[in-house]
Length: 255
Image (cartoon, rainbow, N blue to C red; front, side, top):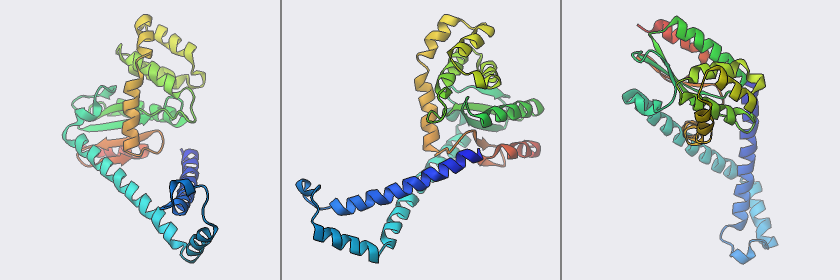
């Protein structure tokens, strides 16, 4: 995941630069008649540039103010999500696949990508935790296919959703991660056959999986999820974003 965050940091820096450039363009064109937008008065341009040279902090402050407002929106969205998570967890779970005890006091939501190698490793760890603490935790799976870097993430998510419609999500989930380097249409059908799924229904469900996956993606965007795997936990002692390495400590401490 470190590589992803390095890439993400570079992207953020690029967007900051782009925001500054956009703001400069706005300054140049603001209040000018539409027909003059492409013919900026040279004298006015020089005056604006001089102001920017003398007060560069104004541009920085504007960008920082915008970023602060965006972060406030993210924090509000996360707080609203956590409140719903505490008071009415079923609204968060929805029709997503779950695993573990329905009576568990600890709910763990995972945003995952079937082509992400870190998610494959996390899947192994989660299986171990569920086996070790069968009565303490309930895992909820949410899709977050990183389509910009993983070409098979979305098709794999659709195939897993189709398997979920026949009650075989977790078996399909494990098979996808086990065969992560072979992701593709032939693998999706082979797994369906091996799990004795109704292939006609499976193929039909593949064509209608997009809305459910999109709903998960929209939730991830609302929470500003920055990468996969991403975890949100709700327990008697902890509520919020959590690292995979901390989950077992929380489970061990649960009474």
